[in-house]
Image (tube, rainbow, N blue to C red):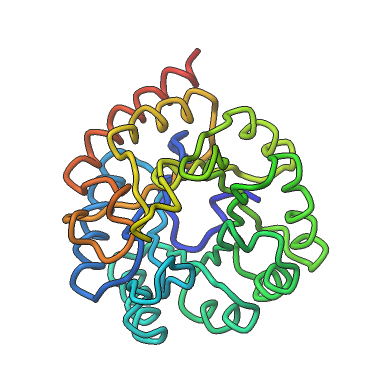
Length: 273
């Protein structure tokens, strides 16, 4: 698919990578608007095509007492408000087939979580909404095997597909990015995104709370741009230490502009080269 077909997306003629960024989970209206306003300002300045990311619910939690959301409809309405306020597209993840039509009423892109990328009913339901479907590659799958997920969506009548790499399992408590997977998945004729922050997670901690290595965000992002990734996925928050989900691997919002400035410079150099 072509990214410029996503409703309300801007700067698609800039030659830049596109960006999916926002908080892990929607914690409230004020925080979502605050983050969106900052990222929109940065991406407009640097002419980066931008999609606001926020999960209306987190279904995959290690512990039952972990934050999962503020209520589906409430969070989805906040995503719609972000879109209308800043005239930008939004993306959120869905977890079951019966959520696809509901979420599609509020957002432009439906995201399939990595652990669920083989779920046929979920992929079909997402495809049948007619929305763009962003499929995250399972940590347990090769890049080559993602062609089957792509084909499930295409065979359901939807060619608007994005694939997102978020690292591969490396032992029990770490992930590693295999950059060979980016050109491999691009051969499926779909845009490929590198999820920077989730690639730096350290799952399966004894505390039941996922850890992370945010100090390596720029390292992984630079490598992704050098390899030629089409887009980047970054979770960001103005107070990661107190974020209600995935704070350990998020980028502090204050660091986003500097990072994007450096990455766009790398992208320009590569294109010119």
